[in-house]
Length: 360
Image 1: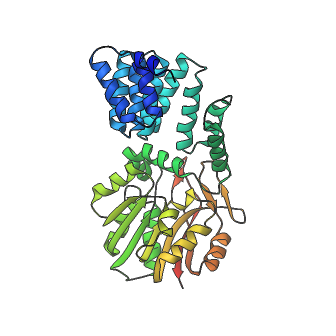
Image 2: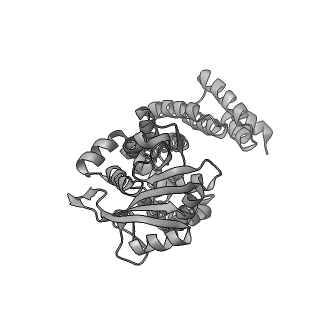
Image 3: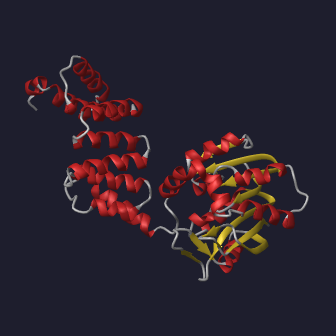
């Protein structure tokens, strides 16, 4: 390495520091350079890189936005802002910045690859693979392609897709679901509970995929304790604002249930199982977390095949025979399965089932 040359090029020197694991030092030197009025767009984008490497996402976002305000038509600057937004998990905004860069320079391979990574983080495997085409020289591409292919082959919706979907819907979720889509799953499960466990109260309840808390509100009166989990941080914040949950956690339901934790008298999954195809892991994990004579109440969209299938809205459908077979394998009894319409699509009721399983 030509150390003398790096010292005469402060940006190259800063990049060398980042590569050597001294991102904090690189950021400090670049900020000094910019304060002296001696740095341009490259110094600013390198500073964003240094801040991201040092874990300062908020600082990186601030510097990237400043860089864009000064250099709005420079693709590398737009890419830097996109990277900072991606690190902040603001996927729609990150994709928008990468696309702006690509409109200015369609052959910008880093912008294409990062767009693909953003789509991958959102669980959109097909869109990611489209952006990965022609990027043979990009570091990490093979791993990204393998991950996209694994998402396509999985018998469940990718957690990134579910989180991205509901983060976007969180602002008007309740009005959209209750108004436009006639969402009735919480009320259906409450009626089913009246049938299979009449009079039971003071229950420890876990709400899987709690969303904004519509199911929690339907069951709060029965609960001595009400916990909720959801993949979407934005939905969790909406649920927290209701003030009805004892605890709320951003988590994948299968991962959460497999951890050691408290037992529950009632586990709910209203319009949640539709993002899982194969339910074997879920049923086994639920059985392990239910107290003796505890219930698992959930809704599904009904399949006409033997087990499960992915519908045109990217929601999984399940057959009654499949639910009964898995319940038996998992040590759960069937307390009741009834036909139900948990929601509407295009003004028509969606054929579904509401199921009540009990730990034997």
